[in-house]
Amino acid sequence: MSATEQEKLKRGRIEAGILIGAIIGIAIFGLIIGTLLDQVVLWLIITGVAGAAVGLLIALNLNKKDKRVE
Image 1: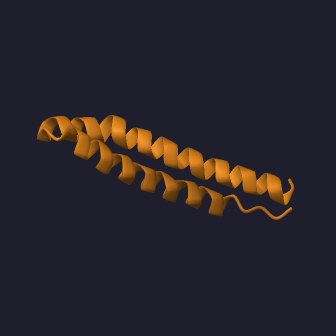
Image 2 (image 1 turned 90 degrees about the vertical axis):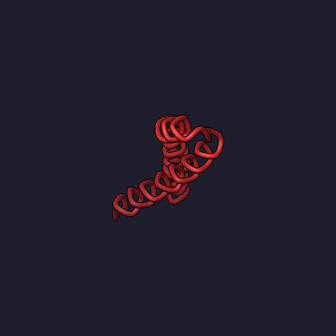
């Protein structure tokens, strides 16, 4: 695999991790907590950002483990 292909794969994983984390954070935690506390919009924003951060950390960790010497 060439360097540009590895870079594209790494970038794609990071973007996917951020997106999936944000979706899970918003869909599950944001709606539940926001509904319980009657502040849905605020909690959708907070959990979306937090979910994106967690997704980013997971994606970066997966990329670190994926370093293969060819």
